[in-house]
Image 1: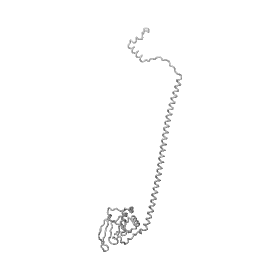
Image 2: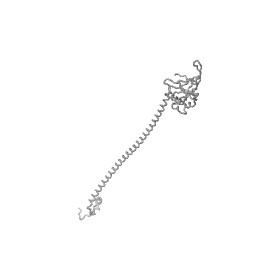
Image 3: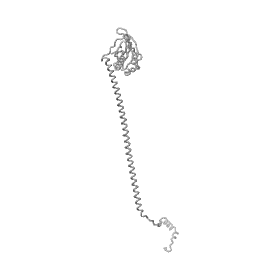
Image 4: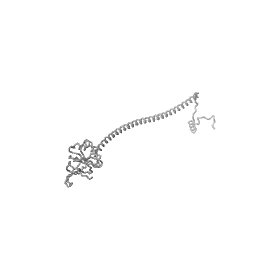
Length: 276
């Protein structure tokens, strides 16, 4: 047993085991040194409370600021929607105004066209009155009067007018027996490329009918119209033109495509044969 009076502290370091244990204890045991006493300000708790209160107010202000920003965004969105509706309303008013102007222009145009049609109808009525006075009795035709004038033939078929001339027809002369006599006849075949003149072109100054009339010697020639049953509208128009220019004419119902003429006296040709 070791006596207290004989124990020396540093002697334990002479033993390796005790030395290791001592070093471990020194390394793992915290050293506590007494600190100097600090003076605590009695206002510190109050200041801490005030700081906490200020932090709460700042947090509340930030929340309120966020709410105000959201409110501003909402108001801006509403304002944008109202502006969009205003622009749409303005565009619609402009479109309505343009549409109203277009309708007024259309109404004015239709009114002018209507007045023009009325004038055209009145003109046609006047022309119809003249045609009715000079027209043939239904079911009959105007007889061909004896005349020493040469005949200028015009065929009306398909509601088109064809001058009977070399430009539109090919003639074939032959002899035939008629009434016990030998007579000369001519068959006129319309050329395949011959273009007739429609009703609406009869008044054209450079048209076929007007050129025929210009070349006509009214003292020596007269016009003879060969009328197909499908061409009475253009016949009435041609007859009206001849009446206005006081040109002697006659007409004959004729439904064949080719024209057969008997050559002889009485103006050079007698009325054509027909299979009516």
